[in-house]
Length: 377
Image 1 (cartoon, rainbow, N blue to C red):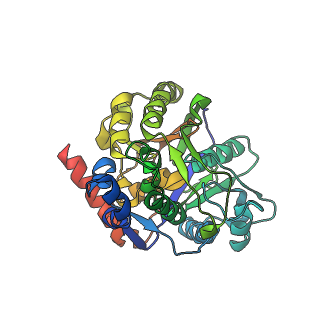
Image 2 (cartoon, rainbow, N blue to C red; image 1 turned 90 degrees about the horizontal axis):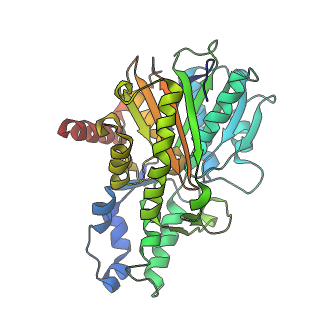
């Protein structure tokens, strides 16, 4: 895929206020830890996750998506009557029907001529939405579009803790399949894409690649389809180790194809934002792709794995805090269960500053962490 007429105007994110530390989560697992004689601190040591954030109890994902879209429109000053496509693309949604996008579209007074729908692609939902909107812009069908998502981890975390504490059939071996569910966090993010005429930033989407390896679609699966806030009590089974290795194996040829498509080299890439699931995964990914790890902006230790909003959240924080500078070649590295890979290249020129964003406590923690880790390298 190559684009000439598509611009990534802005990434925007909003954060929950409630903090659940990994230490506190492990205290809730005391019955399991005692029965299996597990050492405290195991979860943070293995994942690198210090905490994750939670939305208020009983809040539907679409409610927060409304606020994130409103913030994006206010921040960019985009004429909402120009928006030709609106997509809600997180794993979490309000109902089986109608599309969560409908409720968010109505709340933000978006135009009737706008295409409105949900898409689902596990942790690549928002990137998939970006590709769909980019294709419509490139074809001249629309001038601008928004993709948004909100992930809520409370129900999955609470359901997993209950199962682990009460199911005495769980031993150290089969505990691994539930392990990934304890790394999930909550968040919300949105992306605005435009054509050249409407863009005030000229952050050009140069192109990208898609790659599927569905032979491994069984490695991460939830229970049957359920939706709706805290009424949803999902459980997931994940072969984390095999998913990591097969995902990275799928990413390697995709990245080589991306460089060829864009006409870029590893040496000319300035910054990366990637989907983040664990510290081991990130280290192996960058070793395999032949990239320096200090090119990447990490959020995992303070946000956990926030599903489809993880990558755009990292991009929002990284661009707002100066990690990406004018003239940078920025690569978005998306790997999700399925297995699916989406990688995109953007020539970054300008960030639309959000007042007071850098003063947020969670943003300061993330920035300080990145400064420390990059300095250590």
